[in-house]
Image (cartoon, rainbow, N blue to C red):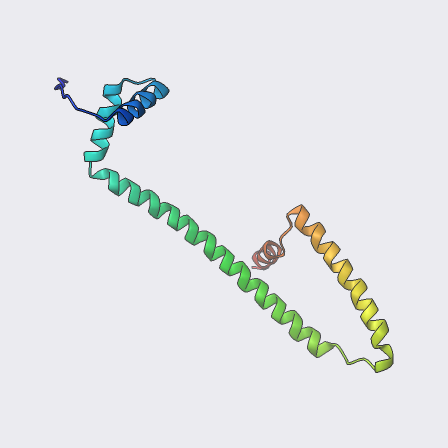
Length: 137
């Protein structure tokens, strides 16, 4: 293919950037300039950027949908537990309140320790629930 010669004037900083880029890539300045001009003048460039952006937005949308699903599961799980606890736990007489509070603190500390162990292992209750439901079907 026959190429035509073009002379352009560049400011010193742009020329320095062009030369550095060409050296870094091991290409000629002419090839780098030609590729940049072609990219600038090709309408597909904008479409490629838009498609890449759309793919990234789709990925973010899927991640957000999973987060929303997991949050919904966590809220429902907490609400179910609270409802069960409130309906199944009888009130304690005043004489037993202090010992019940001490036992509650002890159980809470055990709960926090167990939670820490699960989180450090990467365990996920949400995944377990989804797996259990999938297995039942």
